[in-house]
Amino acid sequence: MPLKPFSPNTGTEKKIFLLKPRGFCAGVVRAIDVVKIALDLYGPPIYVRKEIVHNKHVVDELRAAGAIFVEELVEAPVGSRVIYSAHGVAPTVRQQAAERRLNIIDATCPLVTKVHLEAVRFARDGYSIVLIGHKDHDEVIGTLGEVPERSYLVETVEDADALELTDPMRVRYLTQTTLSLDETSAIVERLKQRFPHLQGPPAQDICYATQNRQMAVKAISAFCDLLLVVGSQNSSNSKRLVEVAGNLGVRAYLANDCREVNTAWLEGVRNVAVTAGASAPEHLVQELVEFLRQRGFHRMEEIELVEEDVRFSLPAELTVSIQ
Image (tube, rainbow, N blue to C red; front, side, top):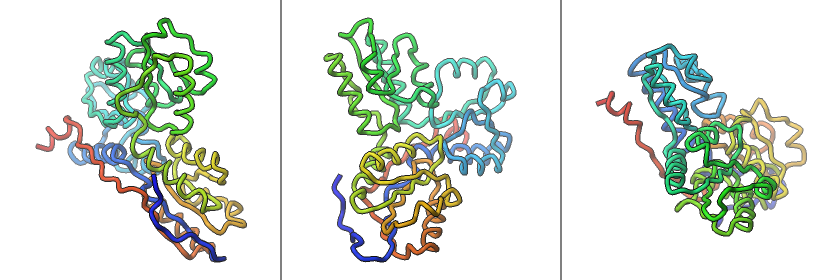
């Protein structure tokens, strides 16, 4: 992705490079809207299985509005209304929902649903599935649950080296949507060395927002001394931004908000880049910018590498109710 013209800071004045795109992706906007609309339509309580998106501030705001977050469906009363988070669920969860006669609204990101459908299709066609991702992430748990008897989880290149398949001739790979592009490429390359017949999905599973935010970090890395990423510690795509910068030799930190920024991080820094993970609200970014301005970073330039115009429609369960 080429960097559009901007003004590198060659003077002594401190400067903020505000990266764009940043923050909410289409799947996150949709998921948050689902909870808010459900609360408006039906009133509280509305139950949400797991965090609707991985951001503390978003969850706290929706909780204050009347959403009740539960870890498992057994915590929601029989017959109640429950929203699935943006990360998706396994078929066993859907079965449990049916048994408890729950009124489900599915806020799964359509790009995650795409991965689920690919897993089902590959398994139906007789392939083993190698899923590249992080084992404890909600998205991966849901995807593995689609066809657990045919799925193999790989997290690292070392896992790829140790992988044993019953039929190496019939194998496909899928990925979590929020991974590091570079690390995923390295794992796929090693898998293909071991299993020459390995193929992936027709279109890459790592989502557009994850790619765009990582490419923006790469593009600015040569011009900044520090990268600050707004996002929660359990946000996979936010953590990947820190890793991408670190791999390029740029100091980077993840902060839930400006209160978590250690002023010692700013010592000796002249150029600081700011971005946000795909589930971080914009007001937290602006609060961080103001925090930096109060500490001498008076110049700011917003750098937009690509325009994002992706929109997802609401779940059918809500559109029917709205009509």
